[in-house]
Amino acid sequence: MSEDNKSENYWIGFDLGGTKMLATVFDDDFKVIGKARKKTRGNEGMEAGLKRINQVISGALEDAGLEPEQVKGLGIGCPGPLDLKKRRIRTAPNLGWEDVPVADSIEEKFKFPVTIANDVDAGVFGESQQGAGKKARCVVGIFPGTGIGGGCVYEGKIFRGANCTCMEIGHMPMVAEGPLDGAGNEGSLESVASRLAIAGAAAQAAYRGQAPYLLKETGTDIADIRSGALSGSVKNGDKMVEQIVHNACIHLANSVVTVVHLLAPDVIIFGGGLVEAMEDTMLPKIEKLARQRILPSMRDVFKIEAAKLGDNAGVIGAAALARQSVLEK
Image 1 (cartoon, rainbow, N blue to C red):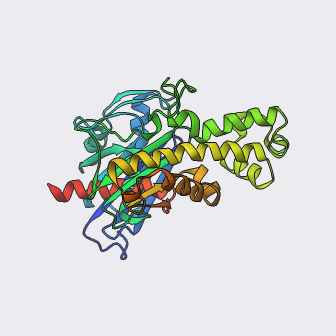
Image 2 (image 1 turned 90 degrees about the vertical axis):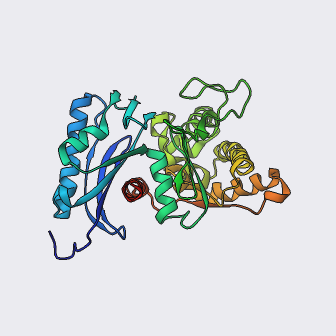
Image 3 (image 1 turned 135 degrees about the horizontal axis):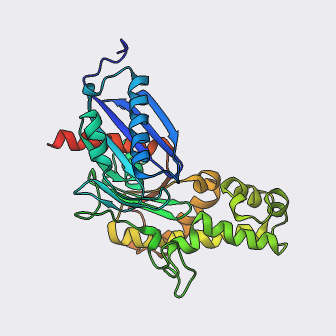
């Protein structure tokens, strides 16, 4: 162990994201001691996937110069619906996994306790502990991407059901008989305001000749219309794409109105690649539109912030959750 690693407590945060496996070792002050990562493989089976998770953890421990017995606990943010009591992933469609005993697999190899959480919950928890929501009583996160993830931390605890995650903001109904989202629901927030929905509408605009800059730079393939391309399109005068983004902001603002009326959060954090690329365009618009529809008595109870921790939010939140779980026992 390095001479610098003098903390008595070490914690590991693991982010099992859509494209990556990232493990980071922290001390009690959330100083990074070591880390390791691998790409996820959608075509590998569950056993191979669990083996790769353990390999990444071993790599992070090696990078930190620590032995497993020096780690007090590990938290892992997982995609898909979870069985929180059994600490299993019910299903992870992007990975091709079903009923995965992720916590048991890690504990069997390393012998330290494991806490699991939804990956968005872990990210919001990280922002509440060390990022844009630090010291707030109630933090809500809204993350537009392929879908729209949501999470809430209330008085230092992740807000969730007895045996499942919640805060599925992306599936809140917005438009009667609207387009279908990834779960087959009509007119949800995800179906009209996710990055994927915006990119789809922008691709049509490019095809019709209504977004010449986007057509020139990326063409009409939705797979190529990422967050940076959308931002560039707006900045370079594609008025139709600007209107598409504005329409999405209206729906996102309405989700803020609902959240404020239900929870009165101190801070609402927007994050993800789309917000990072278009923060100055989207967030002031969302906040202005939301405040116009919120009850006068509640208009000043919240603020909207951009996420601060980026890709580190998930591992910080997972490690902080592990520490919380261990210290409460």
